[in-house]
Length: 331
Image (tube, rainbow, N blue to C red; front, side):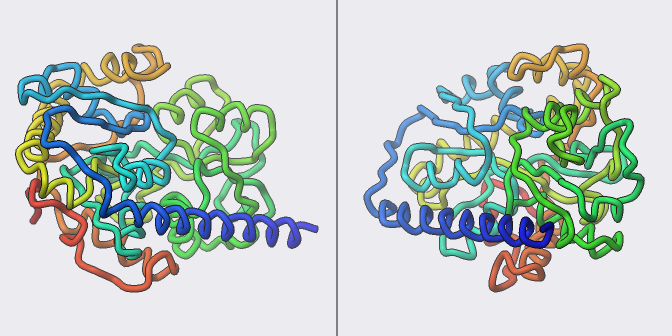
């Protein structure tokens, strides 16, 4: 019975990938028709999580305004929904996990990162954890076999990292029943026993831990990728960047100033996040933050590209610089 359920879920995931690919291909026909006005009005799509802090700081501290940029920001569920919207010309700049941009490039799309974004740095900055209920009998990752594990999106970056973790930590991902549950709904699902484990992102990690409802099975989830890895950042179409170089550079300057502000004023992070999410400021101040750096290392990106090839997400390995705009200082 469990094998049939797993087979069914794999079929669903495969169907989802095909639909997503179809959406990209369909939207690709709009590429020649999509137009962007040479304007300082900027449409940004984001996810209301701690990893998107640069946008919140740049808006709150007036860094966009000082560049003459007027921002219209819209909440989305993830890079998998933001990328098609951008391809259709509905979004100028978006926030995405790194894998979405890697796989899009493999399919021929011209997305590029405008700035360096949220970094997982072992062990000081780890905003993602694999959690189980506080009273769960699960003690090691291998205990997940035969259990239910929730990801915010299937066939996503977190699933890829799970595959790397399975190889390094010695458990069989094929024996785990993966579920798709949005980040805000994960903690209730864990509490109500509709899932056995979750891969959560801050601030939801701290919300679960603070309430005494959960404990980490893998605290530094992205640590299996190496000591430092880019999780997600801000991207745009290369065609848009080339059509609007002044605006693109202004966005990069505003975001980089936000990065510098974050690093100089860490005590303000919680209050700023609270203004842009449902998390209260006192709780937001306690979360595990990603690291932010203006400079991007090739090694921030390349390991994820190579893992994507190894586990069949892309056909060929390519250089990290292929998905990084010239607005980024890369070394």
